[in-house]
Structure formats: structure tokens, C-alpha cells
Amino acid sequence: MTAHRVVLRPLRPEDAATFVAYRNDPEVARFQAWTLPYLQRHAESLIDAMRERTPGQPGWTQLALVDANTGELLGDFAVNGASPGEGAQAEVGFTLARHAQGRGLASEGLALLLAQLFGPHALHRVYAHIDPRNAPAAALLTRAGFRHEGTARESYWHRGEWTDDARYGLLAREWHTRHLEKA
Image 1 (tube, rainbow, N blue to C red):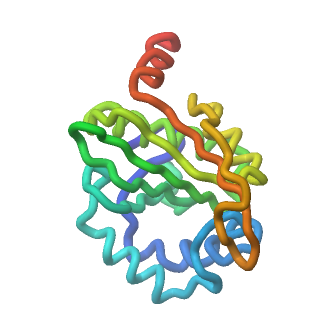
Image 2: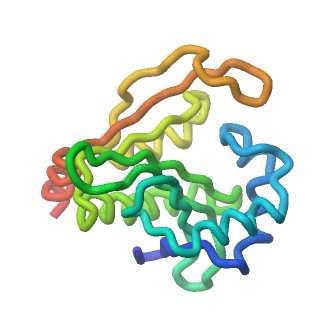
């Protein structure tokens, strides 16, 4: 999956060191659920587990977001539950290395992913859970057409504290209408 500046592709063994570095960056990891410190062996195990996965399979699939010109790993997107058919829904998540943030790269990556999920995978709905203090994540989801569906107060135990959980959703028909308007 390729856009103007980014590519979404499977994670590769050579991504492990960069993957570990940004997952251990306190500013990047602040609102994420993985255990810290994130170790090299965790990255290698995840990359190995993702080798044969595609977003069309049930369960979590992690994809690398890379620079289209240099191949540099910029971050990753995750999809959970993307199985076609009745009730077809998927949860998405995303992480960007600090140096890649604020440049619209996540927007391009999310657009690529949504085009796959609502296009060839024919899903009905895509949703995301975020910490509502993560303003850049909320802005990304809103730019992509997601609507804030609600916030569960102090419902998620995260790194020693109860945190809120904001849920965002986007229906296929909303996504298709939005893309017809842009055309």
C-alpha cells in the first residue's frame, strides 16, 4: 500500500532496532499499552508473528509505516478483527516515531489503511480507542472522518493509574461519502 510519501508494508527483521527505539521513547510510549522497557526480543517475536499476517485476517496485524523514498521506518499501524462478512469491524491503532510526528505522515498512512479496510476488505465499521489526553491522536482520527462516540471515565488501568478511554468510529458509508465529495 503506497501513498505519496509513505508505504504500509509488513514489518521486517531489519525494522527491529528502530521499532524498539521509538517504542521506548517516553513521549511516544506515553499513551500506548505495551510494557516498558520494550525489548529487542519483543520486537523480534512480534515481527516473526506478523510475517504471514494481513489486515484481512482476524486478530491483530501490525504494519510498518515507512518513508516511500528512503524506506526508513517511521512508525506502525495495527488492525484487529478485520474479517469480512456480517458485522465486519476492525479496531485500528497507530504509533509514530517522534521525528515523524506533525508532518501529516500518519494521515497518509491511515488513509491507505482505511482504503484497504473499506475497499477490498469491505468492512462495515472501523474504530479506535485512545487516551483523550492524546490530542494529536484525536486530531488524526477526526481529520480522517472518525467521530468521537464517547469516553468511558477511568475505565482503563494504564501504567499505575486509572485513565479515560475515548472511542472513535467511522462507518464505511461515511468514508465512501467523504471520498466521493473529495473527487
